[in-house]
Length: 208
Image (cartoon, rainbow, N blue to C red):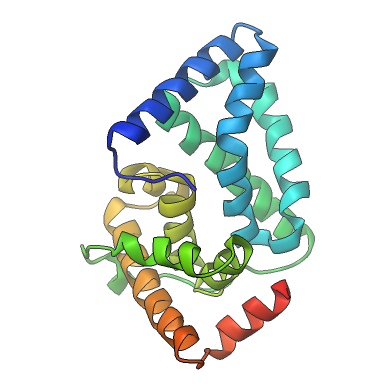
């Protein structure tokens, strides 16, 4: 999981990723493999939150497009994470449309309020549960909330970058993340006390 929000570690990570991407654009296959190694694990986690067990197939489609269009990319390491997340998201929704499946949840105008998000709640979920179970728990949230949490905690995007991926405003992302993390905190508390919500129980049951 990539930690968002800056810091020396995140800056080093993005600097190394940006360097690998720049070298990959010159045809350096080893650099492309390095960029893949940086980006693929969190990208796969994000896709698991969108399409569940079909994440590997969708990720393969996304990487074909990433490799094909790599020369068109302009930006740094953080920008590359956002660009690849956007491609993966598009492929995920193509996949869902092929399955005639409709993504869960919506976000209302009232969700546009500028609210802070408790980033540590998602971290707690990953520490408390196995990674796949944590992703399943997050994916049980309404779609916009789940995506906002996944983009910020798994991909490591900041609010503006996540907003660009989702095609919305940073305030909407902050609101969705706040609501999602608040609901996630309640689900974690229910898990710890032995009480699990129906949606969380179904999500975790799918992983067992």
